[in-house]
Length: 417
Image 1 (cartoon, rainbow, N blue to C red):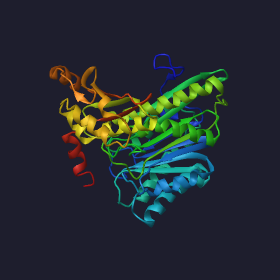
Image 2 (cartoon, helix red, strand yellow):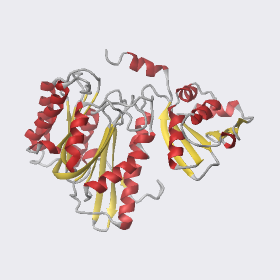
Image 3 (tube, rainbow, N blue to C red):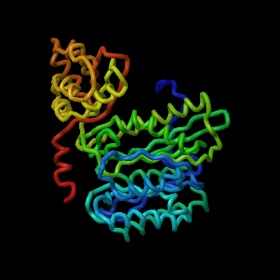
């Protein structure tokens, strides 16, 4: 795979609206707050092939269940999402609210209701203010349909897509949007996307929403395989607090408007672009962890299998004791080895080495003499790399997360009230 310096694609502006045939916008519907973008609408000018990956939490939000149903045919033309209310665990009212999101979007855009995918994020167990939500969807749809005459300028497309990214944020402090393009023999393929996530983040689709668009021409089955592969090495390798949400999903739409079906070398480059795209979005979620002051990267090498490597990296990155040690800038390497030990992976602890940055703190499963001052210097940085070296095989994996701070408790102690 190409590295970041010799990648075959280019990062561009435009977010989720960058690919041909896609438009996106966000509006303020007062779902929970008066002056916040809280309804996002993403629209393809033609029906698109669609794929999705969803939370593994057995408690699933009402819009997620509906979206899984609508995705069965592998076709969609719009995604509508709101923040401020999760629409989860509210019974029949939740089912009706999710259905109304799809119905209103379909009606105002002239689509089939089953071609509208819906998502929500926010407080669990509170009924959705459906009237305000529907009004917001109608307003967003009006912006998109009225944009055809006159055509949006490039800057207007960027600004409207940015509003969609703002509209899915909850406790996020940073907007998470990306776009890139891949030159091909027949033209250019573009990829765009937005994501949200800050708390309730844990591997296995931990609490987040991600919406990705492309103008590549791909069948739904191929798109699903591509998304699953990308998610497994990106969004499923990020953790903030060990809580997996009820609403998590990543949706991927490919409308084929570029007219290009990537094959052979172009397909490999496209796969690489999608993987790197998702990893970068996942890293942004980890950097924006609730109350976080440090970004953690945990790499495991020499594992027996890829599955073991991923289990080990996620376990270390998700350990509350490791995370608090990183916050306190304490080179407590024993917590790292202990977290590896309960990961459910096979490895030989007596051959394990641990590095904090370039500082070796343990070898052959035991501590070594190291400079506390040097280690403190590593842990005082905003970005910290932890390396667990094993001698059990050739597999490796990387997970991303953040430290655990007093501010995390402050944010979540009264989140509902």
